Image (cartoon, rainbow, N blue to C red):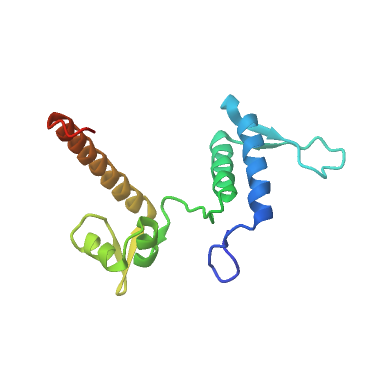
Length: 152
């Protein structure tokens, strides 16, 4: 979660433990693949029911699972615009490397004044393409190693 300064807070031990239990219980409840119907505590006798659609249940379980591991979690819409620094942090690379990716057309961007803005979905698309190329290269290396009988 973001704190008042806009930074991600690392979950406390109590938060991690609570998130672990909650993710397990919510995961079991959401296994049907249907929307989850929840009766809010404090409804004071009213029959109010909160319906959580399936994508929201998956989002909650995923978020709670990360919090249980001690990871800070942020939720972004896919159309959110990121700064080059935010894109670099997301990709776990340097900001100059991201700028090179933008300038060579590997990731789409737009300029706001002199600043580059990158859509979150475009960063994710680049990441998927990059991971796909890495998997293909790894498969090729493994096949070559087996062909050469290198013992792996």
